[in-house]
Image (cartoon, rainbow, N blue to C red):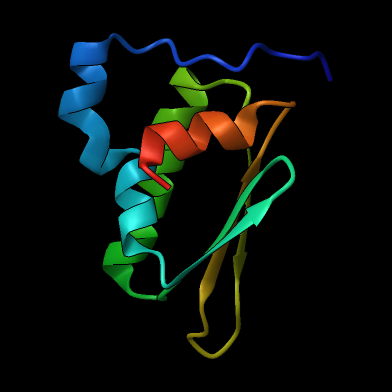
Length: 101
């Protein structure tokens, strides 16, 4: 897989209006946030609203922040949803600045 630059292609205006539907909105829903060397792991509740927020954010982010890698785990018996996002060097710092982590 080729190395993509750590950059968002949205304009600042578009980013400001869409923050609730992107990663910052998902981070606000997180019950726990674990920093990783190359990103973050978020634990979220298993509600339908959270599931929708996560999948909507992934769909949007994979278009404008093409360097991000998403891994989604859904635990059995309505357990937590775990979202791991990572990427090349600089990803954690980029996400931290974007999401005010």
